[in-house]
Amino acid sequence: METNKKKLTTASGRPYAENENSQTAGPRGPILLQDYILHEKMAHFNRERIPERVVHAKGSGAYGTLTITHDISKYTRAKVFNQIGKQTKLFLRFSTVGGEKGSADTERDPRGFAVKFYTEDGNWDLVGNNTPVFFIKDPKKFGDFIHTQKRDPYTNCKSATMMWDFWSLNPESLHQVTILMSDRGTPYGYRHMDGFGSHTFSFINAKNERFWIKFHFKTQQGIKNFTDAEAVEMKGKNPDFAQHDLLKAIDNGNFPKWDMKIQVMPEADAAKYHINPFDLTKVWPHADYPLIDVGVMELNENPDNYFAHVEQAAFAPAHLIDGVGYSPDKMLQGRILSYPDAHRYRLGGNYEQIPVNKCPFMVNNYQRDGQMRVDGNGGSGPNYFPNSFDEIEADQTYKEPAWDFGNSVGDWYDRNGEGENDHYTQPGNLYRLMDAQAKHDLINNIVGSMSGIDGPKKDQIVNRQLCHWFRADINLGMAIAKGLELDLAETMKQMPASV
Image (cartoon, rainbow, N blue to C red):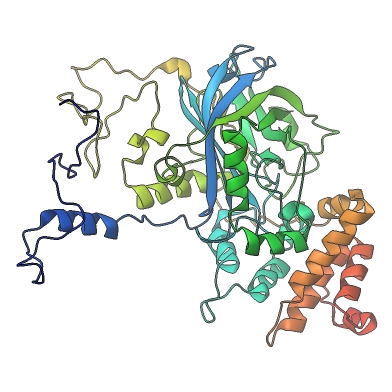
């Protein structure tokens, strides 16, 4: 009698019949060493968890498409943009930044916004956040900053003191902190927030001309945020709110969409612009460099297995395509190294052979061997270049124009030196742009968070951070000082002259 049912097998393919009872010496006797099925099940179970991401551990993801709606070929020769109506498959992973994999996804935190485009010229990873700026501008500070967002090594608890101590000692963080402490720090799931490439990238066109680029993704669902009280309540009611919201929307055919836009700065403008265009703590004002429409990004397919697709997805700013390039953005330069290194640690040296990470068009190189090599390993072909046997060539049409670094002196330059140390104008402008309710929420959120600062250095940290708020906007500083119930006259005496 024929059946369509599948046979239960071991990992090596051997069918077996007993999956619930171990083989024993009699019904009440000890288990026999020879029960290999038991060994295999337990051994694999012990190895099911791979290391979670050090940052962005809690995440959600879905497949979709990018559809090009506008011609930007004068800026870039990238094939993904070369035709109106062209569609490119993509995978997008959202995440929180500081929490562990089991933490709530409604925490006050930036949100990761990482897109993998499966293009004919290779996979392009645009790895950004839901904010256009970040807390720091040099990658040497990154590990130290993330430590302050994790757990105190003594208490093993989150620490407002650690966070505000670091922020108060790094005024370059003020712009991102202002965004984080607004209601944008607690978005209503992932569908109702914008995304940003955050860094400055470059475009290269068919004439080998370079442009500096910022990427923006504007939600078509409209911006929607939790208040601080609503976010705290949702953490208790449903710590996976954002995951459920995204999953249900796509399952119900309510496909979320974002408008992809860019800002374009001619290469020559960078040297004369009044801010450093490669400073990740700054935005480019839209009045100077307006948004240009590119296309529409839609998410329309939930992964059929979370681990296989979302947990094993590996995004790296190093993964660019022809026509899209790097910039002198120091944080971007650091991520080019650190992200692929993190993936090799978590997933192995051949992580790009995992289906969610695999380029669906072509991969030709001389990388060989390593754990979990599953693509045939190059077969009998040579494992060196150049050689006389295969037909792989380095295509010179993909060559990029040379970089003019302008200064050939190698040194350790102060990222916050003269001309690079205005940390207050943009966060002050952001505060002054807010309506009355947004200002009220921002002040309440800052006061609530800073009230958690404690320990012998409490007054020093509070006063140092207050100094930053006053420099950004005197009314903002006054409101925070009042919310913290400080004696303003006494506080002003204790303010540091410089930070």
